[in-house]
Image (tube, rainbow, N blue to C red):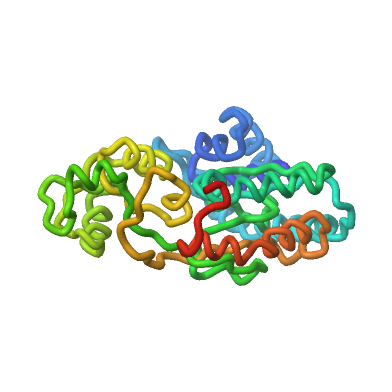
Length: 295
């Protein structure tokens, strides 16, 4: 029995189809199918019942699943402990964070870290996906969460606040906003979500224009005069063209997280120390207390 075959079995069981598992693992569909067939030959039994819309585990597959999961957890735990003994300020370091943090908040700090530690190969994944730190998909995560997982260690960096922003020209053309019939919010989210955040806003009578689910596009739409942006303060305050229209309102905590098994890894602990050393600045930016240093 080959561990790589078991790893593919776990991915297929989680994904629900060979094609979905292949996409997650970035291998071909035929590779997944071939390795699963090899594993079934080793056990001399079928592990999946194939269907037109995917497959489901057989009784044998259901029996194998917890055993394979335990093996994976044990192997990953050993790997993390070995990596945790690394005392060198050198080597790869994977950090994952939402793209808007990288663009409007953390970018200068990440570059400053790279300049200070040239032997550490910092890899930044600007993604909203929740990377599994237990499986070493990343070493450090900066996440929105009010309930960080218990198996991770971390530090709260602050609470994200948002506020309304617009250009002076837009306000001249459509104000006063409290009674305006022509002003619009820059839209984001599906219809139900838009209805909720508009209702709790300072201008609940205004409609939305467009739908821009990515923050950079919301910023650009507001800069171009399409409407008022409901933006995180760290982004809105960074745009010289904007006037802040409302007081900052708290939304969600921001945490710096890593796996506890990596606490002794020098490059992980140094990155944590480096970011936490700038916690007061980050907290103030997140809460809309200060402008970025470029202004």
